[in-house]
Image (cartoon, rainbow over all chains, first blue to last red; front, side):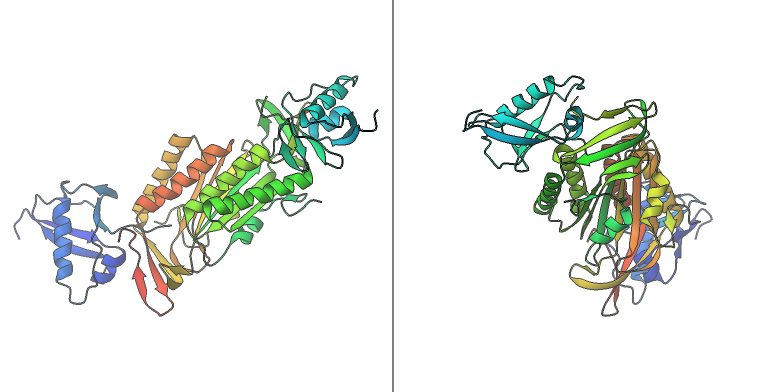
Length: 89
Length: 89
Length: 139
Length: 139
């Protein structure tokens, strides 16, 4: 891991939290990481899990509690969360 | 009053009942009377009242508890009512 | 001949909701009409409601049937209060329960709009200055 | 950080209605979402709701503000319950009070539709056979 790498704790909810057995997963990302990089990182980490159930195909990412576009940059200190399809109500 | 005349007690509500000081008014109508005849009869009777407040311009008539068209015939035994503009809710 | 839709006691939201509740429902929608403290700028102290009762009952029952046909809602509770109501009191209440939310919301709106359009109920407002006036929405 | 919109105790219709009541109002509209006893044909015993709580609070507050801007409604109460709910219990409640009925009805519908579309709340259904499943409305 280079000195410029980002260490991000990605918050997990619902099916993701259940699959990971945790409410967060730490990702090591390149310094120029985007939201798309985060999604790819979480998907790779989930594939590495032995008995994970299938995760939702559609996920979005919130950065600092707002839904973020795939190309948005992720910076140190950002609050990053995986948002599976919502089902309130 | 001819033998073929209709005697109808027309039910009154709201502003009409207040103007007439009664919940009904008896009209003597020709045997071929229609809903329009009833409206004209009630309007004539209200003009004869000394201190009646202005009645609603728009009135409808219910015959046997259903709104009736002006040309509908009125027959002996019908339940006839003046329906001023409704204001429920 | 005041039937189930016309009442002379308070209209209670919880009672209407309870009447339309079911384990098979995922949605309940409710509308309440209440007496406002002013109308067209005049301060109001209360409203007196009266009706052509048997016809009003029939029309309200018909509206409930039409809502069933139009939106597939079988759980509908509709009450209109008669008599003199104070400011803040509920004059009319409609509740609809359904498996899903769209029919419940659609049906509540339909029922209250139809009630206001065609049920023979009248109201006389009482004003702060002691006068009273019949409300004519067409004027 | 559970704020006023997310609750862990029952959502009570009367409490929501009381919060949006005013003597200047002629209308109150309410929507309740309740736990159904089946979904897609499977018998359900309960639903477990969870949320990304701070973000959900913010989104719900934003939806209430958007309803104010769109419909001119200043009296809006919105609560979503978290935790495990039994069949028949209320998961979400929205109440809106207004001088007139159309904005109240429009705003209730807007708020519940937006909540379902974008507030980060999730549910896991518990079935009669003991299994559980996360509900994915996009699937």
